[in-house]
Amino acid sequence: MTETRIQLRVVTPDKTLVDTPVEAVGAVGSEGAFTALPGHLPFLTDLQPGLLWYRLGGVTKDIAVSGGFIEVCPDRASVLADSAEYLEHIDLERAQKALKRAEERLAQARADALAAGTGIGTRADITRATASFIRASTRIKLAARRINK
Picture 1 (cartoon, rainbow, N blue to C red):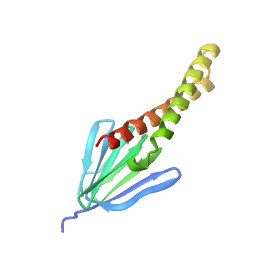
Picture 2: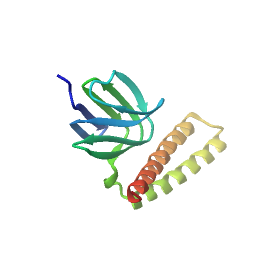
Picture 3: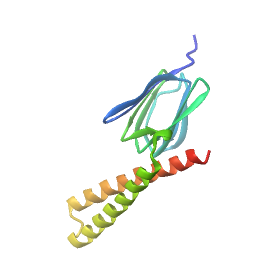
């Protein structure tokens, strides 16, 4: 018997966003874009910040992810995402404010690094600020894509 669905589970540190059988799932990993179907060969890859999608009942649902990992097996796909939310739930105004805060934090962390001679704490601040910047800019880009569809 040929399987027609693959169990998709998308979890973040604070929630399970999806846990349902789907017809297909796709995203962008470190080696490029991929689509996983039932019976797919197993693989594990990191997820690039951007769009993760799945198809169920002929309808495609889009999720913004800010990074993480996906493990694909013949009967399931498990996503461990840093953050994930459906595109229709993105509050564009809130995302723009988060981007502005991230830009300010990044500028401050870089200034602190120059003043301190790039101490360990300063590098960690830059890493966190960069992650916030990427997350906010990804959310804005994907929300704009949804609005312009």
